[in-house]
Structure formats: C-alpha cells, structure tokens
Length: 591
Image (cartoon, rainbow, N blue to C red; front, side, top):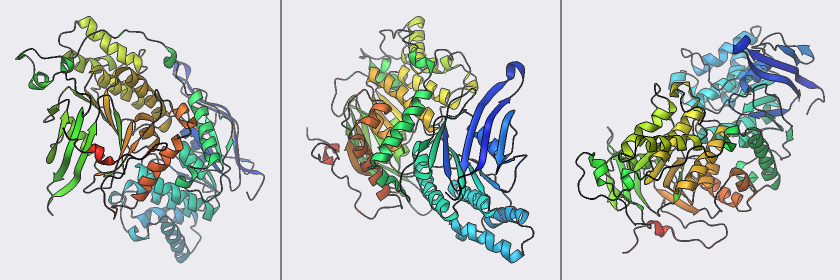
C-alpha cells in the first residue's frame, strides 16, 4: 500500500427506492474504507444491493443517509477520478475500438496534444490485447473483446479508483478465466485502487487483497473482512493445493451460505408423494392405441448395468467447406441410477451430446440405448432442464409443472396428479409461490420450476444442460443443494453438462471430460468416490475434494489454448485413493 489513509469511503450509508408501501430498503448503515492501492472484492447475492453500492461509490446516485467520501471530500456526482466498468459493455456501436477509447480520453484529457492522446489510447488498447482489432466495431467483437474495450476505456481515463461491477459475469468460463488473469496482471502494473463487485468467490480470491461479503437484503450491510494472504502472482491451478487458499475459500463460502439460507429449507414435507407410476415406467400389456407412440414404446426393464449406452456417437454438420464433425465417437456406458457430469470448454460438443440423447438432434452415426431401447426421437422417458427455463410465461408455476404430469400419469386421479405437482414444487422451495405466473418469477425461481417439472415426470433419464449457468454463483449453490436433495430421493439416472468444476464434482459419480472441438471426444473419465448425500460445506472439508478438483483443473488447463495436439483417446480413470481403472470400461462390454 502506498498510503495508510483511505482514498474512498462510505460512512453509515443507507439507500432505499420508492415510497410508502412500495418502499424498498436496499442498504442500511454501510461502512467501507479502502486504502490507496488496495484491491477489494465485495461478494454478495443477486439482489443484495451490489450494483446500488457501486453506483453510490461512482456518484451515479446519492445516499439517503450517510456520506460517500473521496480523499476526505464528499462525492457530489460522477468524476474522472473514478473509472467504472459495468457488466454490460456500454460501448458506442457506431465507433471502432479506438473510437470508443478515444471518446473518453478526448473528454478527460482535452488539453493534451493529439499525439499525446493517441499515445494514451494506443497504450491501453495494447494493454488489453486489442491492438489487432483497433478498427473493428463492437458488433464485430466477441463478448470478451467488448469487455476488454470497456476496461481499456476506463484505464485510459487514468482514474484514481477503478470500480468494476461484475465485469465478467456475462462471459463463458474460459473467457472469464483469461480476463481474470489479465485483470490481475493489469492491477499489478497500474497499481490502481480497485473495488470489484462479484458473486464468484474464486474470482475474489484470485484478484483481491481483501474480500468483504455483502449480507443479503433487505437493508443489506457489509459482513466481516477476509484478508487474502496469498503471494502474487496467483495461479488458479497452483492455489488449489495451497492450504491458505483452501481455508479462505471454505471460510468465505460457509459465511455466505449461512447468511443466505432460505426459510423454505426448513419448511418440512407439505405434500406426500402418491404411489402412482408414470406411463414410462409401467409394464405394457398389449397395445394402447389411445396413447402416443412414444408412450407405447416405453416399458419397465430390469436392466441395471448398461442402462444408458452411447455407441460411437458422432455428429456431423454440412458446411459450405464440407462436413464438420463436432462430436467424434462418443462412447460411454452408464449404470442405472448413476449421475454423470459432462465437462469441457465451450464448443466441445457437450450440449450436442445431450441434445442427441434427448432426441432433439439427429445422430449422424452410432447410437444411444436407454433401458434396452434405441433413442430415435424425443420422449417422456427423458426430461430435460435447459440453461433457460423454457416456461410458459402466462401459466403459473404449478400449471407449468402440471402440463407434463397430466400426460405422463394418465391413470392417476386428478387429486394424485395434483399431489405429484405440489410435492416437487415444495421440494424445490416454491410452496409459497406455486400460484404465481412464471413471468413474475426471478431467474432462480424459474429454474426451480424447471427442476420440479423434470423430476415430477419421473423420467428414466434426467438431462441437465448447464441448468444453473445463467444464475449467480450463490443462487447456483442453493439450487445445486435443491437438485441433490431431490435426486437422493429419486436416484434417477442423470447427465449434467457443466463448465463448473465444483458443480461437476458435487453432483457426479463420474466426471466425463471432453476434448476441444471440432471432432471432440472423451478425453478422461474421473470417478468421484465421495460419500453421499453431498453438500458443498461437507465437500469443502473432505480431504480428497481438492485432489479431484486438481485433476479437472489440470485437464481444462491442458486444453485451454484450443485444439490439443495429443491423441484424444480416453485415458485411465483417475482416482485419488485407488488404482486407476482403464477407461475401456466405457466401451461396449462383451456379452
């Protein structure tokens, strides 16, 4: 630190919106003191007031009570001494990369010569790695590149304090990791005072000197400060084996989880699950002409091993330059009741595999067998939870779940079908919101409806396509626990596509790692030998957890730079406390 005195402060700051019955108290009595040169990360839940907090620091809004101070003087409004980078890029679409950065520089440094201003623009465009794209418009840039422009623009204004409002949350995992590394490097070169708003604990630990949780609202306040006592530069893979990192990660995560527990978790079992059997699990006695073909083909089976089998599954798309093979020879065998996580970088074909399994995408060659029958089309024996919840917005949560239940339980009475619907809505914490229209629900609540709907169908196979990818990490933790709680009761066979290493380990019996596309295939398979039922808190304290995490991080790092030069054939299964098993078990076993 270059100074012991604070550069920016909040003193007993409170903020609310609206009046009377519509009044929403967002922040209450918030105190914050940041020293010059310090990097502080504020971590909190969605809706806890993080953006309100950063807007107060930026001078975009004024507090109802208390003061915002910059070098001891009251902040009266926005100023160039405080640079702001939002989650959304806020670029001028008609200007090039250079034009967007120059717009800010020309305003703040109007007295400099044209050459000096150009040099300043060029310096920061180069710092964020966009020298090759200076003449491109925002529409020609990826999300990560657009966010780089925002960072270059903020830095080029030479602010004394850089305010980052969840700048990476809208990006895919790989782009996010690369920009995190760039932020870390830039913060050390520029020696700026930085305040980062984030919902990602790992991001906070990687970047910050100090982490402060923002307790959930209404009337949100700041929690205790956690010092990040890790040497710089920090490497996310190396940190994984550092005891200080593990302790800090556990302490911050446990604090946030404890503060964010919902009262509905303790609500108990409101509706008993009736003893009714869905048509997909029911033995068929002769033809049923009044039912769709998909229902007629469904039948109960005693198959346990090889319940789901992928045989050299390939997906090829025609292109003007010839056929493009996205997935090349995906070969896997699953037992009944097994939970598989499918992980890999964006574009590796994870969702393509899942959509073929759901019957939503044709298989170019090979085949998929479920319960002894080949998958040829979509059917009610498979339930899919997508990244976007896909609800009917004009229907209530209950009506959205009932749509499928009424079709899958044709022999149940209306009362029994009602109990099935309400049982699963209660299990996902929506007992008090089941009669609200989907359009009025938050993203997290919509995804709860999607999970309830999937389990209510009692499918033979549950398919989860990055089901929590659009949610902040704290909401994700909660819904992962919801998913695990419901799954342990049903033991449904499941495949979950994810890019989240911790999610993959928490959920799965085995983690299947895919090589980069095109021509992606299984690279490694890791058996997760951790006791169930699992919780995130228990996982963080298990001695093997970070060994599993290290293997996944190592694999993803190996394939981080694009197509990998080595053979993409499956390696041996990786087990922390057992001898490796051959991945050939995923091949078709001899009769």
